[in-house]
Length: 518
Image 1 (cartoon, rainbow, N blue to C red):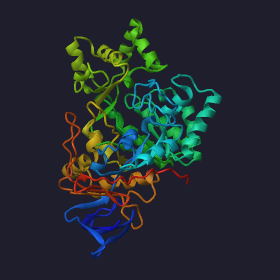
Image 2: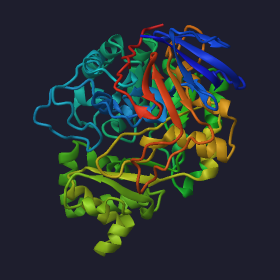
Image 3: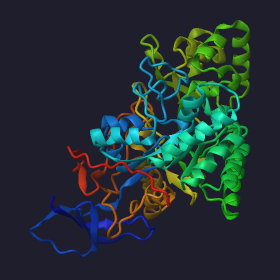
Image 4: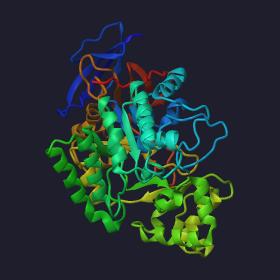
């Protein structure tokens, strides 16, 4: 493999320093020099005049667990070189074999994988067998862990069950998992109390892993949810990453300042806490997450039985509506399983309700019954003022939180980093470009202990994105999300071109990044 010289670019190194005009030399899979480097016949010269040379973007919160195995290009085309999967409690391990495809949660990866994956090593073996476009690290998901041991029971784990969960979590961490994630308003993670989380995080601490949490609430009780997350991290003495920080619904937007204050105070008092966010006003989630917890004990079969009971149906509708911080018009259907309801994709729950001449809460429950629990939404949650506060906060890393769906995929899956750098940095000037690059690379690498990644430094891994700062952007939107970004010229992963002149190459140079206890 010839050494590569990226010539005459504007280097932004990920360390927060001002841009400088320089060359970057790549030898093998590492950066071998930065500065004024003379050309020679044994170098592959790439002219980067007028372009930015930056560390490859690190997406520490994605749901690309399966996409990594399928070589989907949506992340590498937007400049991502490393992903951390297994977020929000959802990971493909630990799982028992499930050849019948039994579904319990109605959420992502429900019933998968059919062959089961007992530990992180099983997942990484699969990654290495197919060769990956990107580097990938993996969290152990609490949803998967709890189902592995307790299925969908709502009870507090018995002492024996707790021992098994801790043992299985240890096994996943020993075989390469970088940390532990929870999804505390998702089943069955939501069944866990703080004591269970502390107990598991104490095991996590023994392996020097990081705790990431989709908190118990982002609405009316978001401040209490932040308090719980901080208490778990402080008690177990583990680093805490608050996932996709936001406050949901206009009724709650005023709560963001206090939530951020809590995080800042915890940081000042010695808790190792930070957060991440995507640069969009809307998120995406399962419709089930809006329902009261009691009706979901036992999983999808129990939920469908409850919805079939007229008395329980009425109670579920009333309780769901009472705790709504969005309007029903804020919730747009983006994915269903049945062919008959595909025409509903792109319509809000309120619009569907109007078409069916039925109240919105009941329409939502009817959809869940029709789709056997699988209805995914794009949920318009935040205000631009709050988004600015979160994205510009010094503790925030930029993430996609994305996954590809057959229906209306959220545009963040295709355009997060180009949108961030184009709209919010170049056009709206919310921060300097060098600050934005830190948020997209080095901050994430430091946070998740990705050794020698996230910066451009001699001896570091050659994960690099080359882009046009005046053109970078995306046309991907909620109506037409699956559009390739603009302004990304080259993406280099471990010294090899994954994207060259804006086009995907045949190279698959990604690595499985197994965690090593420090």
